[in-house]
Length: 397
Image (cartoon, rainbow, N blue to C red; front, side, top):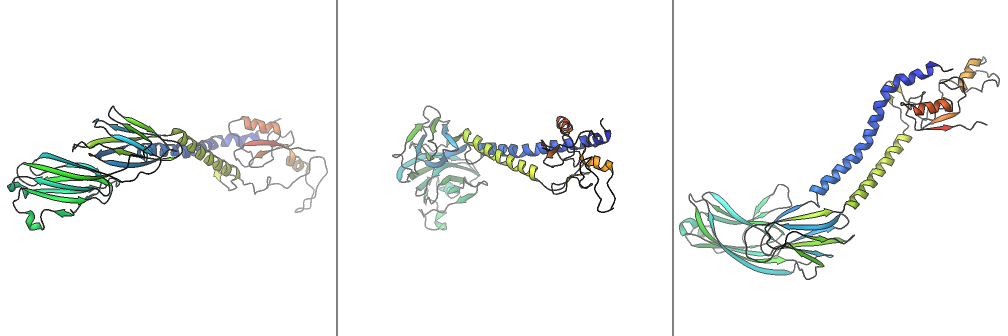
């Protein structure tokens, strides 16, 4: 015979505990999902993301990549000007020096700006000379601007020439046919030659450039490819750190060289790291879920911790039929009903209690009723309402 009093609490709290189980499942999935999104964003936009570059003639730019995370480096030159990609196992020296010059006529509209972008390494020098009609030359401003490409806000810095054809500011306003200035580059970065026309009409000017460009030594490179026939790729040797340089030839073309450098990720490494992190988080959550000894309130029902006695509402009773025991408080003998309830299953009231629940440790039911609880939807202890993970059988001699 089954008593409805023991089953009523299970039915009453079933709809309250099910949302809690859903929240725990979502909490465990939230951490690895967040990590996966972070890794994906890092691969696409982070340190090893695509790099859009603007180079010039005889430019050489150095990149460093770890072969543990990067499988391949690819460079694309849509203009097919012939960009070279070199690979090194050790950092190359900035020891080569290439001299090149260019001379172009430039039309600058009234109250507008025009210019050229170049990549120059530390130690390079650039000498500029510009010529125009004497009446317009005084209203032309030519300067070299450093574009801090590593800073997100694209901060600009106008450089001061190391030497000029005019000795003072008053001499710059004299009606001459040409001006010149020389600059010494102290940091690897992108530089912009800016021409500003403050005349009310367009100006035709001639720009002459003489550049002594510092470049990385390519004689010790271990691999090389060119974009003459399209994009090219270099495979990195695992697990060493690799260096690559993007180098342009000396053709005197001042037009902007738009080059795209891509890092192809080694997906196996990221999957292994993600799997390790997820495993560690899962073990931590599992440990906290099993060993948590705090008291919680769920749907108005108090969860009892493992430090609380299993049956606090009744003292320990001997099995039925073994004799009476004196109550220390009242001094009277315990009734047969108390003895019966102390060892009989709280669900069916027929079989003795012969199992306990994990993790709460309560021994309140027989093994058959415990299995019925585990086969149901709630899977909660009838005493403390904690979620049951396992049922262990007692060995009664």
